[in-house]
Length: 299
Image 1 (cartoon, rainbow, N blue to C red):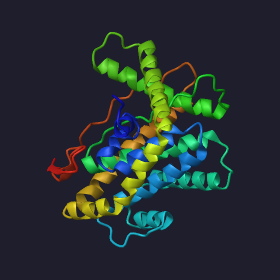
Image 2 (tube, one colour; image 1 turned 120 degrees about the horizontal axis):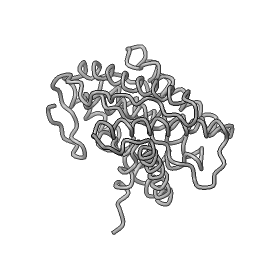
Image 3 (tube, rainbow, N blue to C red; image 1 turned 120 degrees about the vertical axis):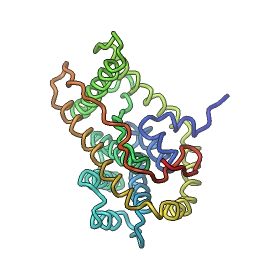
Image 4 (tube, one colour; image 1 turned 135 degrees about the vertical axis):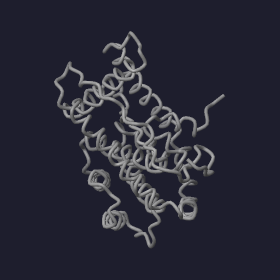
């Protein structure tokens, strides 16, 4: 039996889990990632809309009234209220500038394309941790390059840094599980398997792009109603979300530092494995979305 499109999207490790909070984010993130090495116009269109939606979602969760319609004005308002951390502003800026360059046919740097998709991932992880009041650390898993591709040195270096980060995480998990095979070879195989799975899933999504676009269009039509429901649903917990958002910032900033260490580590070496962050910050009791159900339960 053929998989449903939502099942294929959900299997995208960088964005599929966002389906529980806002389907359009999962669709746009998965679409952008699926074309990361093949179509800058599709990537940047969906990445920019991802930034649009995540800022609108943040405004709804935090109870902001009279939210500006344009993305730059919305970013400025969220910044004025102290909601956007510097890394968030930078991620949105990079997404916007990449989209602008692509629109004018000037985006020829694949590194900027990968950075734009990575920025969407960071924004999505921040939203997930803000809503769930968790401090879940997740690494960005870039799709593996198509076989036979000769990438420019800068792109090779960026992807190598991500692979070293995945290997370091794999070593940590193997060691914490008490597995005797806590070796670099095993962790490397795991990292290659993950990036290959993202590439293969992207191939499936590109083959069903018309269906994905249709799902995204339907989801976009209902976005305003879902955001209005968020405002009403979380009316009593806006302050709790603000506190949770600050903790969510720390998770992304920590991963950025670890990726920078991986990028500066000489080829052939692996950064020292790091202890994972706590999965739950214990920040109190307020509603959180039940994955896949659209209901609310106390945490």
